[in-house]
Image 1 (tube, rainbow, N blue to C red):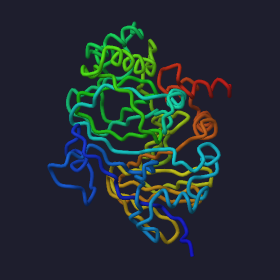
Image 2 (image 1 turned 90 degrees about the vertical axis):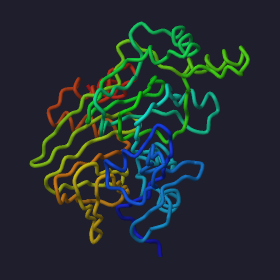
Image 3 (image 1 turned 180 degrees about the horizontal axis):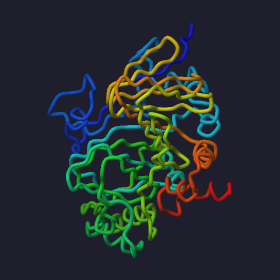
Image 4 (image 1 turned 45 degrees about the vertical axis):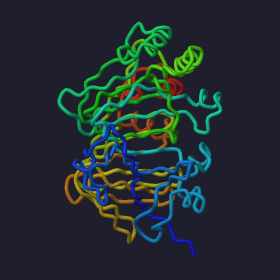
Length: 372
């Protein structure tokens, strides 16, 4: 007999990247993580990659199964009718904690169109960062400075100065940045953040090409990279959160685009998340302690724990045992889940649009205009 679905916990998939250190271990209460000298650069909280890396379940009757197997068995009941209609049964997101104690190199990512044009196995990659911890004076480089052109990008890649063409932005805990495909970005380090992205591993390196290549090969590589870079004067990846109060609790919209949305739930009292069959939700506890209650199933969470709520569950209650904060991720219907509820709450359209950053790529600007 096939077990019924319930709130699912997964074992993290780990990445030993040199830019990481032990910050994730220090910041959260995760267990069974490798000891030094492992550089814990990333913990993949929920993922199902086509190469077979798929999050394994660690709680309940489905322990030992992978997310990939569960999607095969449960389909719409897990993913949701809207998600399957839009994405099929390919899991649409990759969610992680990322420790950039050291340098994250200069890069951008393909758009869906460019990835398809180049025959890549993955779609494009729009991603977003939510800052959790920062060192004093930490900054990130994201998007281009005013006056940058494709020719300047080309020259800067060749001479290794591309980060000088990017905007340098100070960061603080609670800052959200929406990095649409094509956005140049770089970090000198000193930041720990939550990252959500399309389920993709495409990458456009913006460092100087390998000098061992021929001149023609170097030129071709740089030209391919420049084609993938989005250049826009006035661009800002930083989003402006929208705060809604509900008694002792707060619901904060951080950012939203066609691929994903993120909210922060600050909880002093129990609150309900309703899974109405249309989409799944992924909840990551970043502060406090909380129990996820679904019928007779009680799942206690500590900071750094993540749980996936399958689409078909119906009502799920979050019961904080101390003041808590969750990050709630999902693939939205921008009209029904972002624009309409915020308008009902009295939020102005320009404030709603600011959840998508300041850019011509902003999905919310298009939706709000169409719904005006």
